[in-house]
Length: 331
Ligand SMILES: [Zn+2]
Image (cartoon, rainbow, N blue to C red; front, side):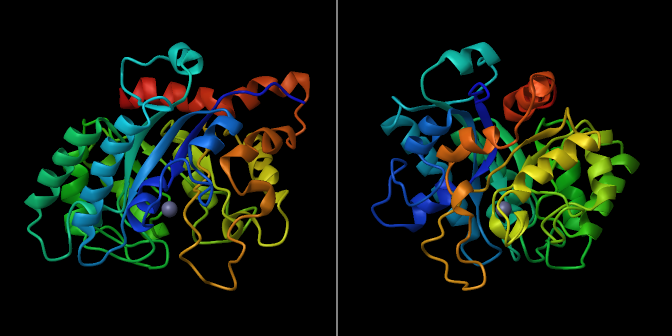
């Protein structure tokens, strides 16, 4: 057994579960990212996404999740506490419970398709006021929205997306490539460079397309961009993005990252969401049993079978890379 390192996880969908399932709480076991699993898995920092699809009512749903976040911080203060610039690595590791912070998954949560664009900035500020610092924004989801193209589209960055990026410059909020089309990702990076915008870049919950060919995973060129920009890549546990048939391919994604210059950029972004409301026969089970909740972290880490000499890169993967990124680019 390797030492049980603390885990900093870049992506979990607890908040949308809480607003969508009646009577749900963060103590539940029907979502893989909840307080009991964090304890079992030694998860010491969890980024919680404010997730919406691109549909009417998305702004209201995002607001509801921000309120829910505030509420659970109050009610479950024995188990979770807000991550902010005052928390350093030592304090997070030593403090009982799990530090949490939020991210926005789909900018449709701050601005619907027909809203005036100014509304986006107002809503964004309101969310930040309520939740504290944002780790990142994933501008699109699977589909296209007013800002650009998502994973299952071929659309690139749109004029509203450019305005949003300009707004984000210097605000210490990362932009997330996990749900962009490839064209959108390249457009966005080119725009950042062209305008010399100050925006950190990550892929919060995506694997390698070289290992498992799926539009949710990053192609080699984008992986190189993450390295060049000193970003992060959070390894995703969803079966469809790991490998439909073999659970151990998750470890192969990680080993591929290590072998390709990502030792200082790899992290976890397990992406536990509520599967109870979904019913796609092709995708059931949504997670391999070996990765089905955050309590599985110790065995996932153990299965990497890392030798003494590789302990350092394991420690970086589990928490040190995220820690360094937060310190240098977010706070
Ligand atoms: Zn996602």
